[in-house]
Length: 394
Image 1 (tube, rainbow, N blue to C red):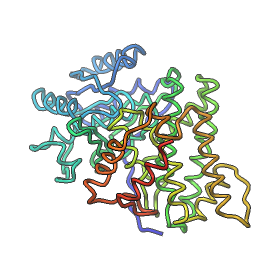
Image 2 (cartoon, one colour; image 1 turned 90 degrees about the vertical axis):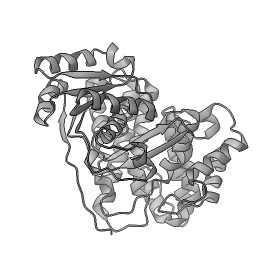
Image 3 (cartoon, rainbow, N blue to C red; image 1 turned 90 degrees about the horizontal axis):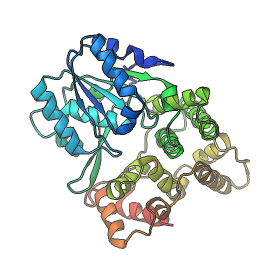
Image 4 (cartoon, rainbow, N blue to C red; image 1 turned 60 degrees about the vertical axis):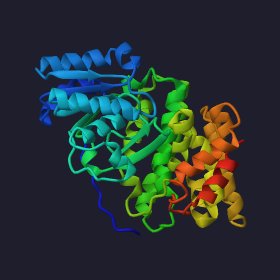
């Protein structure tokens, strides 16, 4: 097993009416002037944004509003937020929304404390040493960004989608009320669960087989998310199962399901090129890529894929044919994706066949101009990336 350092400093306020504590939490963590960052009309329509503003007003905390965050959040809006923070003397960022809003908030928090271009961090040219504090009110459970160190931003100049991870950006607090997720569209719900499950699967599929407790925890998260998403797709107002999903998004990505093991993240990196180029939903893109990745790499640790098939996907173990068992596990995962309305091919995801030029552009960008690899279970060269994309086409 790998040595590890585990760090999860975010304070969680979870349950019905949790958002009532938002302003007091801002004060607790030193906020005196807030950038209130959010997405589109849903935060307004639901009344949540109005509620948060009333709470801030009641505590005498001034704020400046910045909405407009879209899925696959854009660098341009984050740069606008950085300018606002500098001009207005903002000392705390409050993100109201899902992973895209929180990722954008983290990007703004970095940039407000940096003299250069915040994109430097995402390109790997510089490392952040200071950031504004960020708090979150979660409305879409999926990315787990409310407790993680990660931020993913899309730069429209060149259609680049890159991530940056730094523990200093972990939010100070996360407000989570499962009732606020009752009105999520079924597609959003399914894509969110796909994303959170993949956060654990990126850690689960490893060559490190000797951290048994971490593996047990990962399998429990994956099984529970399967059960919960089926339930809420049937009954969107099932509070108990919505709560499992909301908490599952955080558990899947704050790091506990990866303690003591090497992490892969190839499926995420392959998918980033899809959502950057075609603007697709990230979770749906993961579903379109993972089965092809899994078939391509499964022999790197066949026993791990057998264990996944049996312990997570309820496949009968044919001890005489481990490869067959592993493949049936992948097929069962594909069926799960289809059952919850997720695509399992790029054609299904994008709605058309992509061109050879588009495919080659994704390979070039994923490999950083053919100079970089991705993955850990199997280290993927550019030729491997191309092979997986081709397998996933249709």
